[in-house]
Length: 334
Image 1 (tube, one colour):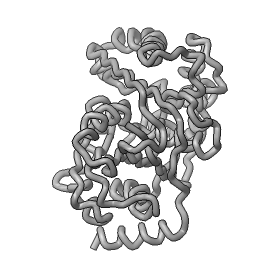
Image 2 (image 1 turned 120 degrees about the horizontal axis):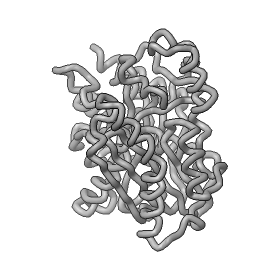
Image 3 (image 1 turned 30 degrees about the horizontal axis):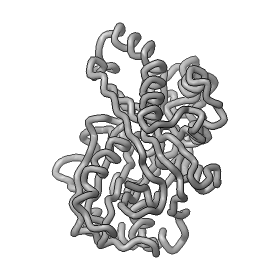
Image 4 (image 1 turned 135 degrees about the horizontal axis):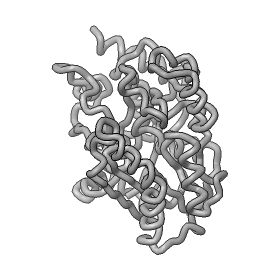
């Protein structure tokens, strides 16, 4: 199974974390911890847009890519953290399929692993791919709106931002090859944010050692060692936790891609894919390099994919694609 191409949409509108104090109910001291300790400077918002427009920004890139035949996309897996992220009776996925000429695709959601759902989708895709033709594809779609302070803040940990990603999965030998995937769910932490303080304290204590254990386990199961890994491509929860993980693994912090933590914040399931696209665009990986996609979803699921790089397609949004998106969005709201 290969990641053939990745597209991303990061809104231009940036909101400094300090300007969210009142909205999120943060005290100045808490904001300073977010900025100084956790390295969170700002988050992005798709200002004035709804969930349909956010996901449409990235889907427009997919269907208008010269390298993509839309009819080859047989499944769309929409991964999201917020279980009810659009109101009944709206059917966001069905509307997007109609707008972007993907009516033939079977669309469904993954959400129960929260922010780890985006990597769990790789496991689901690996199960579905053998039933498809060689040139068929599966599209993993991510992106959510921070429509309430409740979903935008994980207290003392991170601030959520808005962004979207689309990942084209196929059988062909192009793009990054997945050679291993490890997922560990610790159900005792299912109510970590709403349960008793002792549960939260325990989760904070086991977070780093548990994540390190899953990372090492995933690598070892493929016959590799951490010395073989060129980059860790992580979620953007914060800088402080990745400093701890890098130190515990004796892994160089500069090879954990955290550049987006201060720039866009934690964008739910989208982080690893957005970061992978940027690493690819910056040519930080060479052909045959091994790297890890790593994320954690509250609940709590620790997920690590071991990948081998062979180049990943996808491009920046250009004015032609934006124009096509705007036309499609106008049709959607008629």
